[in-house]
Length: 606
Ligand code: CO
Image (cartoon, rainbow, N blue to C red; front, top):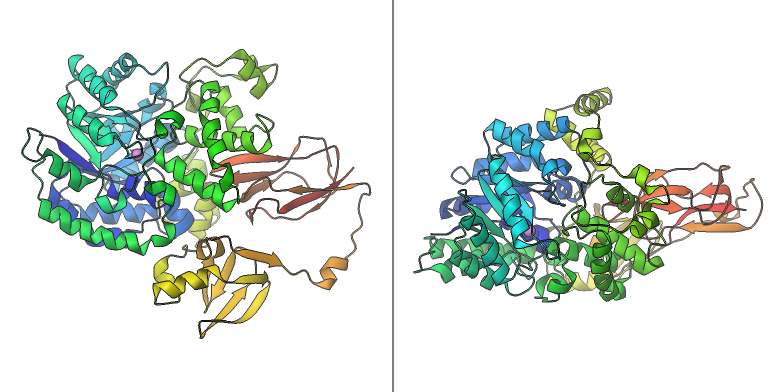
């Protein structure tokens, strides 16, 4: 018998709906899903924590609580990124332990723990802590293809994870590129090596060969397969739960699940799929066997597509896809999963936009320093020198990166208390893990993103016309007539628009390349400013993102390459460098502001 592990409430919508599924759309179906008899259900972790506070104005801890209550008969699981927890960089041991403790306390019964680089040193603390709490621990290794990722290496590391106390193991094929023979060989290799604990295979439809891989894994003795309800599978999601159940019926691997019940669940998610249609992306829905060449995971792919579209650079898609494997080889073959997928992804986008390694992100430098863990393969001295400079040897560390970090939980707790924002202890972690957006969320300043339920029109056809039509100069306030209906529209900044008193994020309301341009008043334009003189140079944003920090003040002298501001794009931090030596004349942005590509950040003279 084979059991299924259901990913509908975590990875499925992370892969095909940009992680935007809301708790209110999950709860009504939990009772039915709880009756299926799944081995377990993943409902939390991965990118869902971030999406909750960033886009949905939802408390992720409440989601965990409600879902675990609504699924009393099913073991609920989270995806835990080792020392990165649910974010993109390392946290100190005390924060990781506190997180595992509180996640368990809020109903998380199982932890799938993985490290992007498969560095077991990074996995030890969360594994031990989750075991201490009494949770089920699934030790997970990222599956990837490279000359150094052999079947023997995987078997050897899985054996180590069993010895570290894991209750089950997972082959985490986040890019959906495992071939039938590789799936067979790894599972069989583990069984032959005497591994006793259950083995789970996690994959995505992306390559088109995953169904075959699952069947071969069954033949090799796999215990659990990861699936999602068909409505949310697309091409970058998991193989469909219903299809797998049907395929294995009347074989020795029969799951024994009730197909009628699964059909009722499917019916529910068909409605959910329609409800989130503003997030449908063509590329997330089409099988793409080229994944076996470029090896880009589903989540990263939809993220790249989304980001390139927003930047008006969708035509660079193919070039970026070609650049990713080159960068990856130069980085020592990291598996492409968060955060290494973002590091490699953003650096690849930079290489295509500005020339190879003309701009190097801070995260690329940190990766080369060993701050994410040990890169799996050798990196050439030439690359080290290119990224870190001639003294690179002094910068690269050899120890477990989190061991260099000071404890943080108490300090963060005190900070929150001083700000008068300390509620439950879980809030301290929300703030520690996401200092900027977490704080904004705790202050109550996050606006839930628009979704189709909020649309001011009832008929779907009209909705589309409204979405494509308007072009506003801001600031703007007035009535807009569409198909005989009046709307009062107000627009104060370029990012939000108010329709009939309700606020929307404009890029979501008008995904088809809306236009908003600023009307500058006469007073503002003729305003004279005193300051340094010389040839003026405008410094623009290299890409769409958020200004995390501003490093200079007007009047500061800077040298070419000095950071002017830190821009967060695609969840990674990037320096915006001074293009030449000179003096900062004026700043045009504030900390926390969203900018689009080429938006003015600063003016300098010199
Ligand atoms: Co996945």
